[in-house]
Length: 189
Image (cartoon, rainbow, N blue to C red; front, side, top):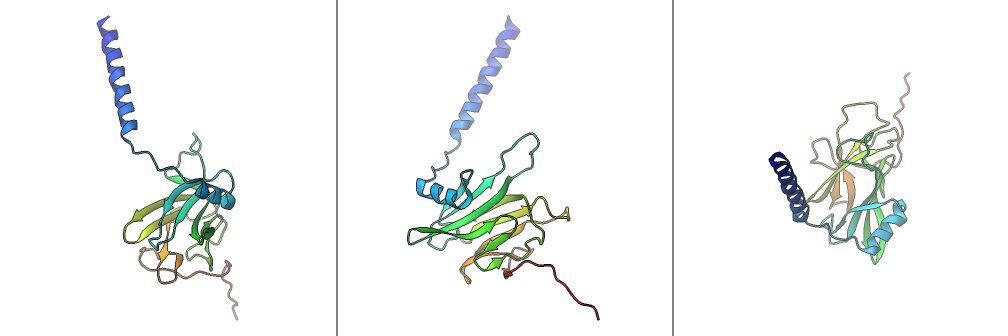
């Protein structure tokens, strides 16, 4: 009888510990209906709002939303896996897209630097929020890219151009966009 009591006593403590850990986690703030509705209008009903607020530290309200691939036994990739994502900004009460991630990375001016030439079907999305630089996004293509050692593409708000742009491989300097995405062709003479 004593071994059963010890076993049951041990289970009770672990269960209480798990409940205490769950209670200690701060609850994520509820997504306002206006933001959820705007996100769904851009990406459809399967959209999750990941962040909202003054993300770019430019005084405007923004949100980051994505179509997140749920974790399954066959999808055990680390990080947040998305098929599409957007950053939208509120201006005069209207939400407009300022960054899109689908088969490619795009902003209002075109395709972001370092975007793969081939279509990408899924991305690993990582992000960080800093007080001085705002939202930093890191997109790693999962499929459609032949290089297995691909590095994340860094994207951040550029206060000089007033739009999201990709960063060089050192994540220090902004890269220009391309209005179209084509493979370079040269003619030999």
